[in-house]
Amino acid sequence: DVVMTQSPLSLPVTLGQPASISCRSSQSLVHSDGNTYLNWFQQRPGQSPRRLIYKVTNRDSGVPDRFSGSGSGTDFTLKISRVEAEDVGVYYCMQATHWPWTFGQGTKVEIK
Amino acid sequence: EVQPVESGENLVQPGGSLRLSCVASGFTFSNFWMGWIRQAPGKGLEWVASIKQDGSEKNYVDSVKGRFTISRDNAKNSLYLQMSSLRDEDTAVYYCARKRGETWGQGTLVTVSS
Image 1 (tube, rainbow over the protein chains, first blue to last red):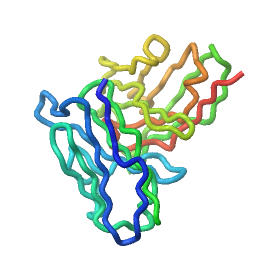
Image 2 (image 1 turned 90 degrees about the vertical axis):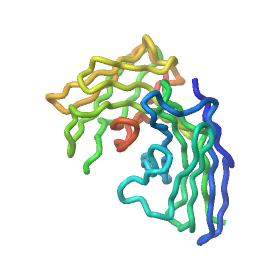
Image 3 (image 1 turned 90 degrees about the horizontal axis):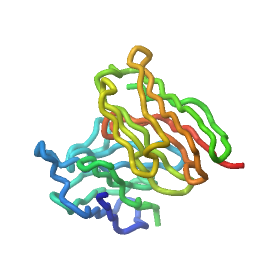
Image 4 (image 1 turned 30 degrees about the horizontal axis):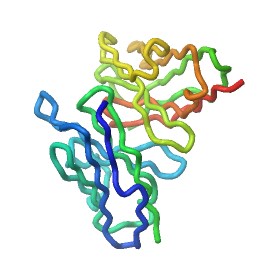
């Protein structure tokens, strides 16, 4: 199975400051169809996960533009340009290139 | 866009069986792969199973192979997860989701305990 490794696992941030989460996969996430199926999810306390980013860089509808995704191959990053109070929660990367689809351990974002 | 809605809370004994349901609305259910994902209490996410639009292709994570069966009824906009030989470690919130996680339901808690 593809192992997804996130860092850091805990991320205290100051409101208005940037934040960055790294996600590395144990093998390339480039699919045979040419796409890289790397998603980012946000899970706020007590809520279901919500997809923020798909195929590395594409923001889902309604996702604020302060969220951005980047990377390629095995190395990916989620950035929040200016953290707001509503961004508190756990963020997961997920690969959907190789079955079984697998998630990172999660990064807990909290306000300092 | 309305998300899938799973049914109820569920308590079952080890070795028992349970069927989860998810009814979708707000999109053309028959056009999409669907899947089940679970989250053990206080833990991360595990994608359990996926099923193709017409049900002709199904995938399972190793930990549930031979015990869980995913199915769908496109006429009823419904997704199912038949779970058998349940173990303590199957205790989790189970979510249904569209495609590769585009949208998720609100989750249903399954507790396996004697």
